[in-house]
Image (cartoon, rainbow, N blue to C red; front, side, top):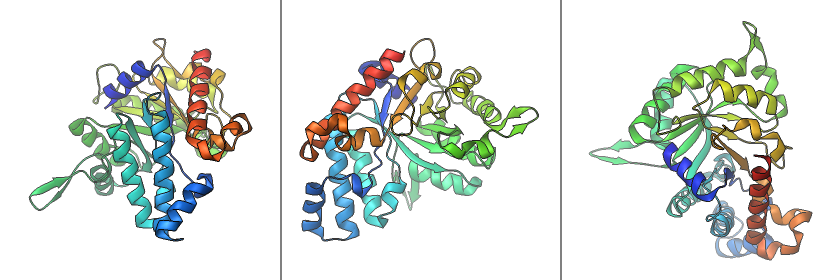
Length: 305
């Protein structure tokens, strides 16, 4: 799947991913009202509202972007109906030709990781049949429990030609509480980056490994170092826009070929209509505001590169 991601990025010229992380407060009133009119003020109504919200944004942006990244927690909070909206979103985006990165941040002991890997990337056997339950193309993984938790995911990636983004240096302010701790004179994130490069050697695509890394846009100097440590790992870069990252901070995340990184924006795109810069579109045309925000983000990153 890394080959498709690279191909999509080359085709669109846009190394960006739209984070489909829909809080109900982001969904315009007319969309919520229609969903509640059909399903009532229920979990089903909330799930329908976020699904329709996602669909409009995808319809308005899919031709500009290579990938989307739905964050599963935003769907899980609405229970089983919310997971249904997550599944609809995954399936719809794949039909539009987008690479779907499931932002699930799983990572556990071997048998549990194997179950997560089967449910999100691989297949599960039911009697004589096999099913691909969520069937994302790539997912985010937490490596805190070591190789035991990563190996089951890597095995599924090799078999199914899927992909991973492993948390290395995250964009949140408190990430340094653990990730910056020195071990044998090196910060923990540097050691994890070395393991990502090692894990990725056995999972190579045409140009890059199936196993990539998450490195926040809010830490450009660390990104510069980690780019050197992981030359064949694609880097998923959160923290752009609402969290403070800007295009000028991102050049070091990329390789000289202009590839090697993909930058995520969530609120900055899906809730663009709430921003002063895109207020002219209004809530009625929130999808058009998101498209304009995507175009501006592409221009910002291209200018930086």
